[in-house]
Length: 421
Image (tube, rainbow, N blue to C red; front, side, top):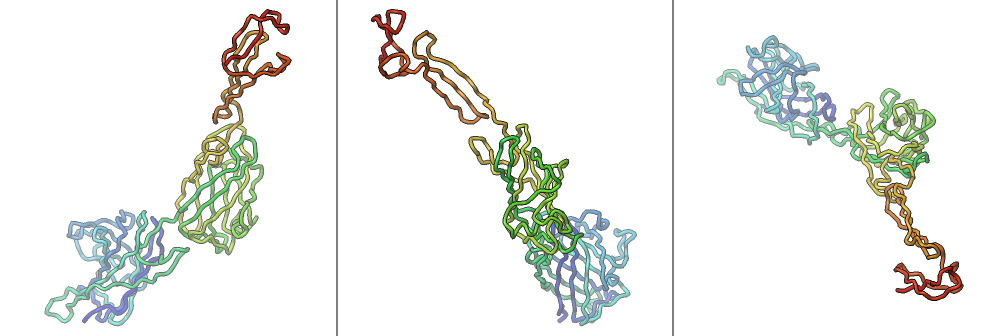
């Protein structure tokens, strides 16, 4: 029975939105001759629409659109586009296949003057663009046949067979070479908090993040960098910043791709940006929890926490993210731990009043203060104190006093003050 005795497949890149080379290695027990109308089909290639950048859209006669994909490798010129009016100038062109997004298949037709020998492995390679969203790998299947006269021995069909996956890891991504496995390379978690919100004082910013892929530095021109930008309100009077944290983290972070300033970052005052590079021959593993801190001087003017962005650049393409904020109240200030929220201390409410305007009578001074719109406090200051009015102690009550017409040597009027409940 005709079948494929060798059938494997792998991809070059699992990263969303990037070009991905699919390579399938096949070996059949029968020859595939173009003169007999031989063809191949790879199915379950869930790459979605490819647009027009990889070829022209043509109808395949089944109410679906196909896109031309260029083949490469030793066997590329063994396959041709079919001779069909709808294909236009590429009709019969060698080194091309047809991809149908709706059917998730790639059709390959052996050129009329070519033969793929039995029991001889060949490789089919082509590039497609990965979808923008993450997805799991699929079991890719292959089938083949020859459209020769059914009465001819050259007519045959090879049933669907599952292609084996290599299951290799890339940049810390498990099974990254499995076909149509797609992940978004980004910061899975990124947040920054601060230690001090007061204007013109030192403030330690704490950065926490994890990534979905590894960040590495194998050579100076292929090192990953991490950028924290939008740090408005933070001032550093130098071109670099000392990092604070665990030594196992700091030894992997430098202020240049050349490995300069291990444990420091590069500061761009004009752009309000901190950049650190992974040091040469070091790696930040995928899903590793990374923490480091650095100190800035808060600006003099009060402000809300700015929008801060984390991004990465290097051999693996990265999606930037907006850093999350703790949103935790601190010392009575709402969101006081949010990065670079700055408060200039002042009394936002300051009122004073009294309870008694009459001379020689105890008076209660009421002072109301509110600091930077935190909780209001009322301060009661009795004046004068009881001991200065009378030679003997008595109790003050916050209720009205009654004047009684009895003589008293302490007052120029024939009245004395007695506290009544």
